[in-house]
Amino acid sequence: MEAQVLGMTAIAVSLLIGLGALGTAIGFGILGGKFLEGAARQPEMIPQLQVKMFIVAGLLDAVAMIGVGIALFFTFANPFVG
Amino acid sequence: MRSMTPARPRRPQVGRLLLGQTLTGAAVSLLALILGGVSDGLSAVSGALVCLLPNAYFAWRAFRLRGARLAREIMNGFYRAEAGKFGLTVALFTLVFVAVPPSNPAFFFGAYVLVQCVHWLGFWLVRTGSRT
Image 1 (tube, each protein chain N blue to C red):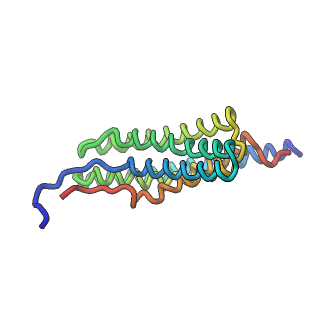
Image 2: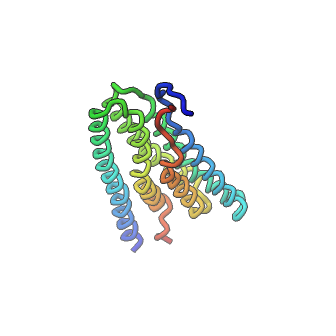
């Protein structure tokens, strides 16, 4: 029974980290593309765009990072195993 | 009457965001210290630090390059900064869980999530633009 719980936890952890990273990567790809587009149109706006990109990047990966934390908590201190 | 001096680029105040995160982490840690004692306070401090250190690295790395001609380099710097932040977060979580397991995971994750949520106030905390 414990082995089954551990196996399921490993699958859950890999999904949490993998899907979080995938979502962040897609978001960052779109964000970077838009940044380059905006920079090509208005190069004088690059400093403002850089700051806005920094803020949006923080919003983008916040939930993924929380997922990574929960996944590592399950890995190192699994609460489902007695 | 406003003066008609030309616009001057100003450094972004990203430090204010990091300061906001530090203050939030300190407040949560203080609350944990009062409510649960020293061990719970340390759990909250470690949670806040696990969030704050990768964010500081990201801010440092993302704003190393500045300038209108460096759009592609800035973009590559952002990608590297994000990869570094992800790796650093995983490494710090692992370090905390292996070396100093938090006595109270609720305060640890509470501090982590609250410090992370300060990013949602980023548009208010970080002001950009030019001084006119």
